[in-house]
Image 1 (cartoon, chains in turn blue, orange):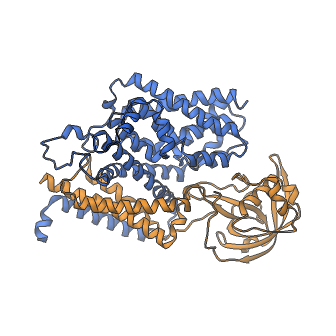
Image 2: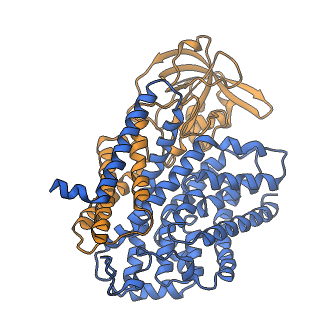
Image 3: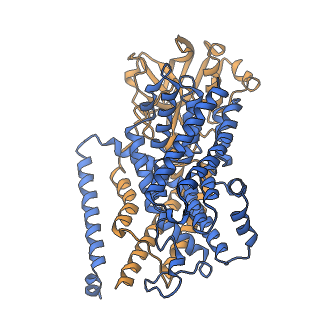
Length: 341
Length: 247
């Protein structure tokens, strides 16, 4: 029995991999006891687990919503009105964002789920961009971080909505066939494998349990979520937010805005707490650059970029990032002159 | 053969998912979860962990399996890597004087948490000895930062952790702070006061101390800011609730 199991090349590969991991762990353990200064590992580890533990329920929730949309699209439930509402009503992204609050970790998963199941390209992108900004906890944290500063709170929501409408208009002109932006895979496109496939996949979302569908989504996206959080943990450790504050008072608003947007992209701070970090820059950076930080972070950052690349082709992810960046930059500069002058 | 390969990958991925779910549940039951995330997320994390275990069980029972294209070994390695990282850094301890979640600390730039309405604070402004507790710590410290002159020469006592970073290059300076969590440990930020104490060198960095001091006000180009002149320092035990949560 054991000999038969050992003959399996994948099991052999896995055992070799486990041996390497154990050997590396033992070596690093001994290495650390030799008083090398590797305290950055503590920082990466703590940051990673904090963000991962917090993101896990939201990613799982996103996977369940995506599975549910897939189920109603395939006729697995009688909620046809919801299907019609999602596909035909232009206000659907905003209503869904308010009814099912999600953060930036889960909105990527739901975005892909919407697009796979026939929700229009522009509505799906609008949902992805606006959902984290309309999350009640995000609004509440902005309210607490900027007490009495109604301009900042309202601007974050209002300009966020404008960006979520403008960016899809740009992307719809570039990508005429939205389905082509998705990476073709078993996890993404069941319709290509309806019958007669020998791979053993289950291809009938309306027949299977919602736990199985959600599990498939979760397992698909989990390595990318982990990779994204690890990347942002490394950036958080080696590029603390003060590294971006050389654009202090005196430098042009344009430079400040650009630097704050770069900080939001690289640091990948959670949408529910970024307002407090932004508030710590108040007093020596312009309000417009702080607003740019608050707008860009929940919409796109290095973590979300990696998660999106699990569903979408690189060209789409890059153009989405660039268009969000450019539109946010222009609107932040314009509104900072109109509102915060 | 291909089917067996995908089945094995399917089982390994399911096992890793259940392992993470179990780890999260153990952290919740042991109470250590509050070191990582805000308590308001604990209920949804517990629900998600239970859902994760149910998903894993259902995936183990699944007859027709799903699989993901790409490099399975790379996917599995990425999913396992955080466990490896946790194992390697398990004996390391936080040094709040240098970093918290990787971010540099500046206690003098007190971040507002939306507290400190004037009417509520009269009670503290009129006291000669202000005692800071978990409940009033954030709102009182914020009011002191906002209106330092109203608290001039008043005594204050509280328990916090020591940060021995050189704030203005003086050897007698240290800060006694509580770490504040808004969302998770990645956004931990200090709240407290920079203190001056002649025997600052005697106090261990990152240790918990109960201090009593007098509020003084220093003026710089940025305006007035409060400083404490320490009168008494006593070693304290780490409190059950290590962090403060503004909302």
